[in-house]
Length: 301
Image (cartoon, rainbow, N blue to C red; front, side, top):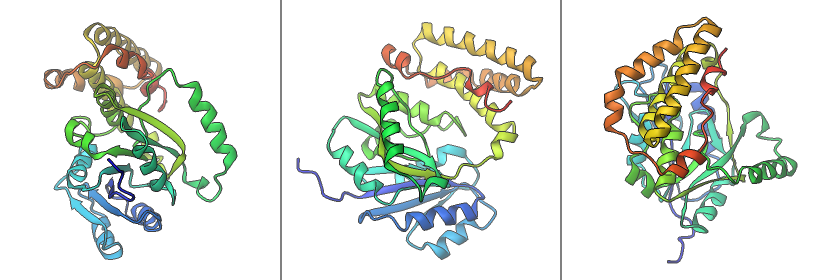
């Protein structure tokens, strides 16, 4: 089959009460050079005028409005709405480099087993200052990781639409965090690859709010249990569960906080629901797509 020169590409992002950030991101997206593009923003019931701003300032953007904030599962509404052969997943505060989509399409069309093109997501401050030296450095680092399977950064990734249609997108039960890892495990298990390309670039203006709240450690910790219970072979599942339990109790005492215990109790409460969704991945995938189990307990000390 001869590849279509410029197949339709859909950009899907979600937003919640970040009107000024969304305006900045959409301004950058409007300058992209790819000629066949649709943009879908899913609003998680914002109250700050985000929807009105998008409709007034960016009339070509398709806005889907949720009745309440449903977290990352709002992406799934955008995925189902999207008509593109490839879907670019963005945060509300991220955007591709001007020529990134052309390069992404080229990567997909050159490899039928490539399921996800993971963008090189850089800090937005580098937008006018990225250079070849940085790209070479990133390439060398990528070669050192060739023995591992990778996930992707939700602030910049291209996915084949047919994969999302088959696998169902992000998990509804996660709300925030580890949703990319959940999907990555399923994509690898389906026989597709996830690869990072240092020349396919996105820029991200990350928020610092969660660094000072208990929301992030709660969802990271709870969802880590969900990942283990849903996807790991049974012996690995129990070993990893015991490891994470140790971290919960150790860091609860060390940091003098209750957030990890609260997350554990919420995970246990929902255990049977997660069990019903359990579909273990192949053993080599569970071993090679490595998750640093202690990371949720170290980021927000």
